[in-house]
Image (tube, rainbow, N blue to C red):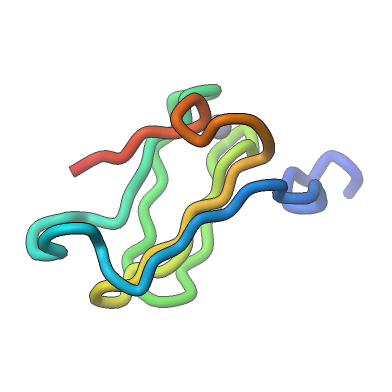
Amino acid sequence: MSKDPRSKAVLGTTQSKQWPGSWDGKRNRIQCLKCDDVIEARHQHDFKYCKCGFVNIDGGACGHWRRGWKEGDPKAAYKELP
Ligand SMILES: [Zn+2]
C-alpha cells in the first residue's frame, strides 16, 4: 500500500473555528490545483483526499473547516469553491 496517497505526510494545514465572513451558503469544498479534483466535507470528520493526494479537507460541521496540502504555497495547492 505504499502508493496510497494517505500514507504521505501532510506538510501544511490550516484550520479555523469559523469561516471568515458568513458560513451560510458556503459549502466546505476545495479544488485541487494539481489534479482539478473537487472534494467536499459534508460533516464533521468527513476527511477526504483529492485524487492525487496533494490536498485534503476535513470538517464540514457548522463553522469549522480544515485544509491540508503537501507542500508549498496553499494558494498554489487548492482553491476555495463557494
Ligand atoms: Zn489533487
